Amino acid sequence: MPDVRGQGGAKRSDMAAGIRAGACGKNAACDMGSDTTRGESAPARTASGRVRADRAAQFMPFAALRGYYELVHAQERVVEPRHELTEEEARELSETIYRVRRGQIVRAVHYDRDAYVTTTGCVARIDLIYRTISIVKTTIKLDDLRSLTILEDPEASAGYTQGTPS
Image 1: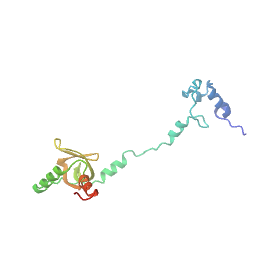
Image 2: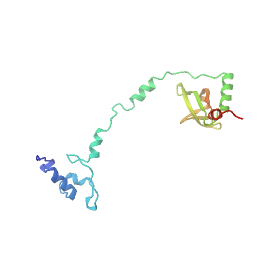
Image 3: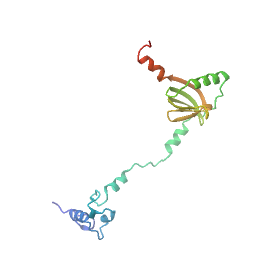
Image 4: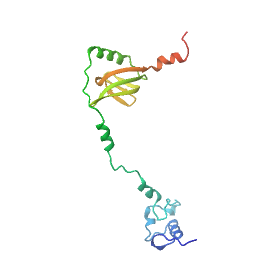
């Protein structure tokens, strides 16, 4: 076996034996906080004596342009003026809101900051007092809605899957 020496000229096997035995002295590898006198095993170490977990930290992903991609995505939005609903549109929207129940799948077009956004999903909550509707995890003010469409009603479709009612 070739003579492999670590830092300070000691052989690897001598270093490992010193770590296992708890011999410290000037060896920096012993000062890592492991107490082998109570029967605990020493943490895994590399050939240079570093704890393997410390060595792995140098390979963590690094985002040199933190926040850049969010900024670029925000610039892609086209600013739209807010659309005022006509009386007929407001009445239809109000009727749809009162028909919507929790668990239905809906598509909502709503104003978000400076543009209209379409959100599709299952209704998690409707709060008529605070005038909000929650679709999955997105909470939308009812005043920001432009249109609301009920796509699927799980209760109504459940009757058809079981057969025709008698």
